[in-house]
Length: 282
Image (cartoon, rainbow, N blue to C red):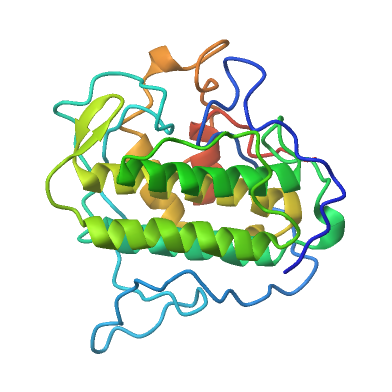
Protein backbone atom coordinates (compact mmCIF):
# COMPACT_ATOMS: atom_id res chain seq x y z
CA UNK A 1 0.00 0.00 0.00
CA UNK A 2 1.69 3.20 -1.08
CA UNK A 3 1.71 5.72 1.72
CA UNK A 4 2.65 9.36 1.17
CA UNK A 5 5.89 10.30 2.87
CA UNK A 6 4.81 13.82 3.81
CA UNK A 7 5.97 13.30 7.35
CA UNK A 8 9.73 13.47 7.48
CA UNK A 9 11.66 10.56 8.93
CA UNK A 10 12.62 11.14 12.51
CA UNK A 11 15.93 9.88 13.71
CA UNK A 12 15.82 6.16 14.38
CA UNK A 13 18.26 6.57 17.21
CA UNK A 14 17.10 7.27 20.73
CA UNK A 15 17.65 10.64 22.33
CA UNK A 16 17.92 9.28 25.86
CA UNK A 17 19.66 6.23 27.35
CA UNK A 18 16.33 4.75 28.44
CA UNK A 19 14.79 5.00 24.99
CA UNK A 20 15.35 3.09 21.76
CA UNK A 21 18.87 1.78 21.19
CA UNK A 22 18.17 -0.67 18.42
CA UNK A 23 15.47 -3.21 17.69
CA UNK A 24 12.38 -2.89 19.90
CA UNK A 25 10.89 -1.23 22.97
CA UNK A 26 7.61 0.48 24.11
CA UNK A 27 3.97 -0.39 23.74
CA UNK A 28 0.26 0.31 24.44
CA UNK A 29 -3.35 -0.87 24.57
CA UNK A 30 -6.53 -1.74 22.56
CA UNK A 31 -8.48 0.63 20.44
CA UNK A 32 -11.15 -0.24 17.88
CA UNK A 33 -10.20 -0.80 14.27
CA UNK A 34 -11.76 1.84 12.01
CA UNK A 35 -11.26 0.24 8.62
CA UNK A 36 -11.06 -3.33 7.27
CA UNK A 37 -7.58 -4.80 7.12
CA UNK A 38 -6.03 -5.43 3.75
CA UNK A 39 -4.82 -8.97 3.08
CA UNK A 40 -1.07 -9.46 3.35
CA UNK A 41 0.64 -11.09 0.41
CA UNK A 42 4.01 -11.94 1.93
CA UNK A 43 6.62 -12.68 3.15
CA UNK A 44 6.08 -16.41 3.77
CA UNK A 45 8.15 -17.57 0.83
CA UNK A 46 10.08 -20.03 2.98
CA UNK A 47 7.11 -21.29 5.00
CA UNK A 48 6.37 -24.96 5.32
CA UNK A 49 3.08 -26.41 4.11
CA UNK A 50 0.49 -27.28 6.81
CA UNK A 51 0.74 -30.81 8.12
CA UNK A 52 -2.03 -33.27 7.31
CA UNK A 53 -5.14 -32.40 9.28
CA UNK A 54 -3.58 -29.26 10.66
CA UNK A 55 -5.70 -26.67 8.82
CA UNK A 56 -4.86 -23.00 8.28
CA UNK A 57 -4.54 -20.41 10.98
CA UNK A 58 -7.03 -17.55 10.91
CA UNK A 59 -4.19 -15.04 10.48
CA UNK A 60 -4.28 -14.79 6.69
CA UNK A 61 -3.27 -18.38 6.03
CA UNK A 62 -0.31 -18.60 8.37
CA UNK A 63 -0.08 -22.32 9.25
CA UNK A 64 -0.86 -23.54 12.73
CA UNK A 65 0.90 -26.24 14.70
CA UNK A 66 3.12 -23.83 16.62
CA UNK A 67 2.61 -23.73 20.35
CA UNK A 68 3.80 -20.93 22.66
CA UNK A 69 7.45 -21.31 23.53
CA UNK A 70 8.60 -22.11 27.02
CA UNK A 71 10.36 -19.47 29.09
CA UNK A 72 13.71 -18.53 27.60
CA UNK A 73 16.51 -16.24 28.63
CA UNK A 74 18.44 -13.70 26.64
CA UNK A 75 20.43 -10.58 27.26
CA UNK A 76 18.42 -7.85 25.62
CA UNK A 77 15.86 -7.10 22.94
CA UNK A 78 18.64 -5.42 21.01
CA UNK A 79 21.35 -7.09 18.98
CA UNK A 80 23.90 -4.58 20.21
CA UNK A 81 23.12 -3.80 23.85
CA UNK A 82 24.06 -6.72 26.14
CA UNK A 83 22.25 -7.11 29.43
CA UNK A 84 24.40 -9.81 30.89
CA UNK A 85 26.33 -12.96 30.08
CA UNK A 86 24.77 -15.55 27.81
CA UNK A 87 26.12 -18.96 28.91
CA UNK A 88 23.61 -21.20 30.62
CA UNK A 89 20.49 -19.37 29.48
CA UNK A 90 17.63 -21.33 28.02
CA UNK A 91 16.26 -20.84 24.52
CA UNK A 92 12.73 -20.90 23.14
CA UNK A 93 11.33 -24.42 23.16
CA UNK A 94 9.22 -24.23 20.00
CA UNK A 95 10.01 -27.08 17.60
CA UNK A 96 10.77 -24.55 14.88
CA UNK A 97 11.42 -20.98 16.04
CA UNK A 98 11.95 -19.90 12.44
CA UNK A 99 8.38 -20.89 11.68
CA UNK A 100 7.18 -18.89 14.70
CA UNK A 101 9.21 -15.92 13.45
CA UNK A 102 7.44 -16.23 10.10
CA UNK A 103 4.13 -15.83 11.89
CA UNK A 104 5.33 -12.69 13.63
CA UNK A 105 6.61 -11.28 10.34
CA UNK A 106 3.32 -12.05 8.61
CA UNK A 107 1.40 -10.33 11.39
CA UNK A 108 3.50 -7.21 11.06
CA UNK A 109 2.95 -7.21 7.31
CA UNK A 110 -0.81 -7.24 7.83
CA UNK A 111 -0.55 -4.26 10.17
CA UNK A 112 1.65 -2.22 7.83
CA UNK A 113 -0.72 -2.92 4.95
CA UNK A 114 -3.57 -1.69 7.13
CA UNK A 115 -2.08 1.73 7.86
CA UNK A 116 -4.03 4.53 6.20
CA UNK A 117 -2.11 7.38 4.51
CA UNK A 118 -3.45 9.97 6.95
CA UNK A 119 -2.03 7.98 9.87
CA UNK A 120 1.60 8.54 8.84
CA UNK A 121 2.17 11.39 11.30
CA UNK A 122 0.34 9.92 14.29
CA UNK A 123 2.23 9.48 17.53
CA UNK A 124 3.05 5.96 18.70
CA UNK A 125 3.88 4.35 22.05
CA UNK A 126 7.52 4.76 20.96
CA UNK A 127 8.07 8.41 21.98
CA UNK A 128 10.80 8.98 19.39
CA UNK A 129 8.76 7.71 16.44
CA UNK A 130 5.61 8.70 14.63
CA UNK A 131 3.90 5.95 12.60
CA UNK A 132 6.02 6.46 9.50
CA UNK A 133 9.28 6.59 11.41
CA UNK A 134 8.33 3.46 13.37
CA UNK A 135 7.64 1.50 10.17
CA UNK A 136 11.03 2.65 8.90
CA UNK A 137 12.57 1.46 12.17
CA UNK A 138 10.92 -1.94 11.83
CA UNK A 139 12.38 -2.33 8.34
CA UNK A 140 15.75 -1.27 9.72
CA UNK A 141 15.46 -3.94 12.41
CA UNK A 142 14.82 -6.66 9.83
CA UNK A 143 17.82 -5.55 7.81
CA UNK A 144 19.92 -5.47 10.98
CA UNK A 145 18.94 -9.03 11.87
CA UNK A 146 19.71 -10.18 8.34
CA UNK A 147 23.12 -8.50 8.52
CA UNK A 148 23.74 -10.30 11.81
CA UNK A 149 23.01 -13.67 10.21
CA UNK A 150 25.18 -12.93 7.20
CA UNK A 151 28.04 -11.37 9.15
CA UNK A 152 27.51 -8.07 7.36
CA UNK A 153 27.88 -4.53 8.66
CA UNK A 154 24.73 -2.81 9.90
CA UNK A 155 23.20 -0.04 7.86
CA UNK A 156 22.71 3.42 9.34
CA UNK A 157 19.45 3.73 11.30
CA UNK A 158 19.02 7.31 10.07
CA UNK A 159 18.31 6.41 6.44
CA UNK A 160 14.80 6.43 4.95
CA UNK A 161 14.33 2.79 3.97
CA UNK A 162 10.62 2.72 3.09
CA UNK A 163 10.05 5.44 0.50
CA UNK A 164 6.44 5.74 -0.67
CA UNK A 165 5.58 2.03 -0.66
CA UNK A 166 5.94 0.86 2.90
CA UNK A 167 4.58 -2.63 2.32
CA UNK A 168 6.95 -3.30 -0.56
CA UNK A 169 9.94 -2.15 1.51
CA UNK A 170 8.81 -4.35 4.39
CA UNK A 171 8.26 -7.41 2.18
CA UNK A 172 11.70 -7.02 0.65
CA UNK A 173 13.44 -6.80 4.02
CA UNK A 174 11.36 -9.61 5.51
CA UNK A 175 11.91 -11.95 2.56
CA UNK A 176 15.65 -11.30 2.77
CA UNK A 177 15.70 -12.11 6.49
CA UNK A 178 13.62 -15.28 6.14
CA UNK A 179 15.72 -16.46 3.21
CA UNK A 180 18.81 -15.96 5.38
CA UNK A 181 17.25 -17.96 8.22
CA UNK A 182 16.15 -20.83 5.98
CA UNK A 183 19.55 -20.91 4.32
CA UNK A 184 21.41 -20.85 7.63
CA UNK A 185 19.13 -23.10 9.67
CA UNK A 186 19.41 -23.77 13.40
CA UNK A 187 22.59 -25.83 13.53
CA UNK A 188 25.72 -24.71 15.34
CA UNK A 189 26.05 -21.30 16.97
CA UNK A 190 25.89 -17.65 15.95
CA UNK A 191 28.56 -15.13 16.85
CA UNK A 192 27.01 -11.94 18.26
CA UNK A 193 28.52 -9.03 20.14
CA UNK A 194 27.76 -10.86 23.39
CA UNK A 195 29.43 -14.04 22.21
CA UNK A 196 28.23 -17.28 20.69
CA UNK A 197 24.53 -18.08 20.99
CA UNK A 198 22.29 -20.86 19.68
CA UNK A 199 20.49 -19.84 16.47
CA UNK A 200 17.16 -20.71 18.09
CA UNK A 201 17.88 -18.07 20.72
CA UNK A 202 18.57 -15.46 18.04
CA UNK A 203 15.40 -16.41 16.15
CA UNK A 204 13.43 -15.89 19.35
CA UNK A 205 15.05 -12.49 19.73
CA UNK A 206 13.91 -11.60 16.24
CA UNK A 207 10.39 -12.83 16.99
CA UNK A 208 10.13 -10.75 20.17
CA UNK A 209 11.29 -7.62 18.37
CA UNK A 210 8.73 -7.98 15.61
CA UNK A 211 5.90 -9.03 17.93
CA UNK A 212 6.32 -6.10 20.30
CA UNK A 213 6.65 -3.52 17.56
CA UNK A 214 3.48 -5.02 16.11
CA UNK A 215 1.71 -3.88 19.26
CA UNK A 216 3.18 -0.41 18.86
CA UNK A 217 1.82 -0.06 15.33
CA UNK A 218 -1.49 -1.73 16.14
CA UNK A 219 -2.06 0.56 19.09
CA UNK A 220 -1.18 3.70 17.17
CA UNK A 221 -3.35 2.85 14.16
CA UNK A 222 -6.37 1.13 15.72
CA UNK A 223 -5.54 -2.45 14.69
CA UNK A 224 -5.20 -4.02 18.13
CA UNK A 225 -7.94 -6.61 17.58
CA UNK A 226 -5.84 -8.24 14.85
CA UNK A 227 -2.92 -9.18 17.13
CA UNK A 228 -2.11 -12.87 17.54
CA UNK A 229 -2.23 -13.68 21.29
CA UNK A 230 -0.04 -16.75 20.83
CA UNK A 231 2.82 -14.63 19.54
CA UNK A 232 2.44 -12.25 22.47
CA UNK A 233 2.51 -15.16 24.91
CA UNK A 234 5.65 -16.54 23.30
CA UNK A 235 7.38 -13.15 23.53
CA UNK A 236 6.34 -12.69 27.15
CA UNK A 237 7.37 -16.18 28.22
CA UNK A 238 10.76 -15.63 26.65
CA UNK A 239 11.30 -12.14 28.02
CA UNK A 240 10.39 -13.09 31.59
CA UNK A 241 13.66 -14.95 31.78
CA UNK A 242 15.64 -12.10 30.26
CA UNK A 243 14.83 -8.72 31.77
CA UNK A 244 16.47 -8.54 35.16
CA UNK A 245 15.68 -5.73 37.63
CA UNK A 246 19.11 -4.16 37.27
CA UNK A 247 18.39 -3.36 33.64
CA UNK A 248 15.24 -1.33 34.35
CA UNK A 249 14.69 2.27 35.39
CA UNK A 250 15.90 5.78 34.51
CA UNK A 251 18.90 5.70 32.23
CA UNK A 252 18.56 1.95 31.66
CA UNK A 253 17.57 0.01 28.56
CA UNK A 254 14.07 -0.73 29.88
CA UNK A 255 11.48 1.06 31.96
CA UNK A 256 10.21 -0.17 35.30
CA UNK A 257 7.66 -2.93 34.88
CA UNK A 258 4.07 -1.68 34.94
CA UNK A 259 1.80 -3.85 37.08
CA UNK A 260 -0.90 -5.49 34.96
CA UNK A 261 -3.50 -7.96 36.31
CA UNK A 262 -2.78 -11.59 35.50
CA UNK A 263 -6.19 -11.91 33.86
CA UNK A 264 -5.58 -8.92 31.57
CA UNK A 265 -5.25 -9.51 27.81
CA UNK A 266 -1.90 -11.08 26.97
CA UNK A 267 -0.76 -8.08 24.93
CA UNK A 268 -1.42 -5.78 27.90
CA UNK A 269 0.70 -8.06 30.06
CA UNK A 270 3.44 -8.15 27.45
CA UNK A 271 3.79 -4.40 27.16
CA UNK A 272 3.45 -3.86 30.88
CA UNK A 273 6.36 -6.21 31.39
CA UNK A 274 8.43 -4.05 29.09
CA UNK A 275 7.72 -0.99 31.18
CA UNK A 276 4.94 0.60 29.18
CA UNK A 277 1.51 1.68 30.32
CA UNK A 278 -1.09 -0.51 28.57
CA UNK A 279 -3.48 2.46 28.81
CA UNK A 280 -1.34 4.60 26.48
CA UNK A 281 -3.22 6.92 24.15
CA UNK A 282 -1.75 9.15 21.47
